[in-house]
Length: 446
Image 1 (cartoon, rainbow, N blue to C red):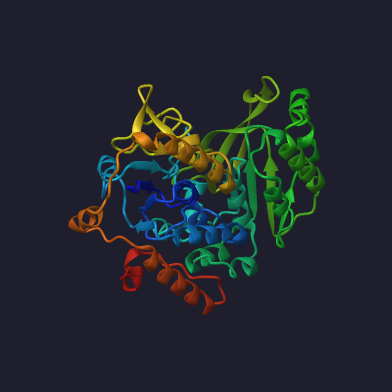
Image 2: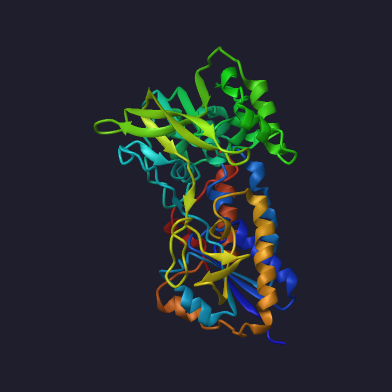
């Protein structure tokens, strides 16, 4: 029996879980996993905050997946530049796009282009040692920072700004980020959302952690937790367990008045209206909101009342969008690949042999654990289509990459790089010391 050979684009959680599902569904199937960066694991390596090492333990599962002799890793290969999607489709039985949403959603207000207004996702990549962001600088010389958004990325940014140096220096955070945060003058961090506490997207455990930082205080005003009738009905919905857990945490943490060296101010019902400054951000204007609509579908509606706040840094965390890939249908309004349960759709019809998984499939929702079910759904569709898919063997892929002067990183290369990062970290009392460039890892490749 000829083996089905599938290409997966993106070595984050959804890519690895898709590989796991394929290898489990079909004992003959083979997988080539492509990743534009040399190192695998995507947001697990470059998005999860370094003071949350337990979340990264999922890497052990990914390593087991990669140990299969039917799995090939091709890092340092950018699909759309080094190899096109159309070329993948001619070399493989099927292609699964699991490359995530790389573009932060823009803040579309006056002044958003001022220096000092940056995506929180860029900040996360910087403090995680992402090679494309390692040489960025973030101006931390003002006393007040504002974070727009109430998702977990926003909470991570607030926690990292307020976290103690004692905690951070025991993580794998790069020295350049440690030194910058150590010298930071930021003392007040405003974490601001456009809707109310019931609609906040952060997890209860994430917000609870902000209440237990050694050098910072989470400040929540009790009056901000008083709910209108619609929000109370939404909270009381039988399936809204997560919101009730979050509200319990917020209630328990509200009412503290004493400040600490750093303070995180949690605010609700405020939408950014404009940024002001000369050479950089100096202040931000918010419009106060009220909630309108039915429970479960409440939206923020401006009241015409405004409030200004002086600040020198604004992080935006209001969503992500995908980047169009040549040869792949794209839905601009949502920033995703149009699909039906993972089958890519073009003009109402499924594109033969082309699939999508992860955030590029469903949008920027859910945690790492949600990617497993999402990828399983996509692979189930692929397996249903398997009888109609061509049998292909991509023997020429290595030669094609070589002819284009691409230097792929294999998984055995990655294991040597991984061991060296850990060895370098142990010398400094850290879990690892990440390599920050391809040139630095080249000596460990074969």
